[in-house]
Length: 517
Image 1 (cartoon, helix red, strand yellow):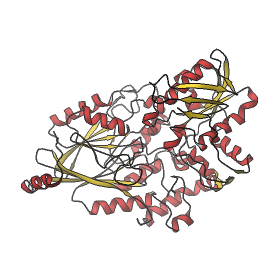
Image 2 (cartoon, helix red, strand yellow):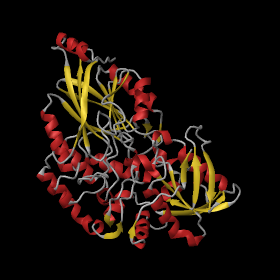
Image 3 (cartoon, helix red, strand yellow):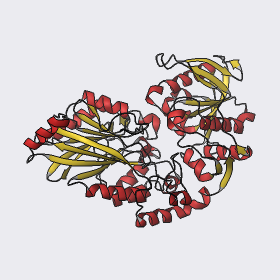
Image 4 (cartoon, helix red, strand yellow):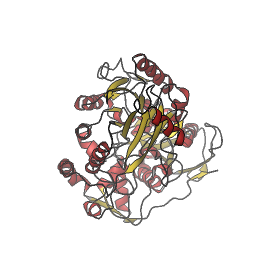
């Protein structure tokens, strides 16, 4: 349905059909994760003093200014979100989806797809959020007909009008959301390609020839969907926190073209606002697609009204998060790209803290999923708020017993999707292992040692993890039937904070417990 032309050819075509051309600006965010306040370069909290000095990024007060400025540059625009507004700071812990709904309504979003974290507290909280927002929430690749809270309430796609033209919007969520979150037993997720094509066909039958997929499925899946479907013009992505463009650390061009489909994503945490300008001809074919993620830095003025509202919302949280609990001698690295691919200092800290808490219970091994580590901590005083930003999920310690064979299977699961940056990557304590990502998934792990000795495949070992992993999250299904499982230990954030406090000024470390071949 679409074509993509560049340079002189695009200009010549647009000049020849100017009367029929339709231009649309797609403004987009993804993976906001309750970062209503400004963030620092580590994607964690940024204090008022640093904000005044121009060292902070993002925050709702800047984001709304950037959105309004971008709207002023366009004749036709839409504002959409690629999922995961939920989870990440005390704001979500305290308000659940209510503050996100309020802010998104004020910013004037047109639609959003469901991210996996929208299911962190089950369908109930998602339904409350859906009831509060003034725009549609979409999800095409799931059957919700057996879930009373969502049946007939969660459409797969929607048609909106802008500038006299119909635009079809389709939602997409991770196919493995049942492993990543807590959607409950009544929802089944399905293949994204088939789901998207089915909605495209329905929209096309209704005369819609401009179709945008809001996809919380990751950059790799988005490219697959673009390659294996017909009729999709634009995919607005999320989930993989991918930065696209011509700046440092970008993983591809903005937009990334796959055939005639333009793929965009805008990193995460409100640090960027995506701005894609698309021109369609009368047949609904793209003749031009260009833009960039706009960095939301100190050059963007904070809206005073929104700033005051966020400060008001923060008041109940201040006592908790401003309490200094420890001190870091150096920055503790929790960077997503590192903690999902190799040993990271935050991963070793958390795993060691877990093991230290329960080692007198006959527990020898700790396993923490890298995806549960959400930020770094800078040097200096460490507040509880910073720890909760790193570990926001209110996970509890789980202890259980499994065989050495099961532990190796768990490690294989952990490194099975390393090329995708999957959150299942295992940070560990009390053990060490090696892996070779060049080998097929399922046969990558070797040299597993526990307490300095080779792992005994037949022996039963005591393990500590978090309740999410123990109950099968991130693909760790092999732990669901573990012996002597107890999932109701202390909160992981509290355990980590107390371990940090006991160490005095904490010096982060990695010690070779995980090696890549």
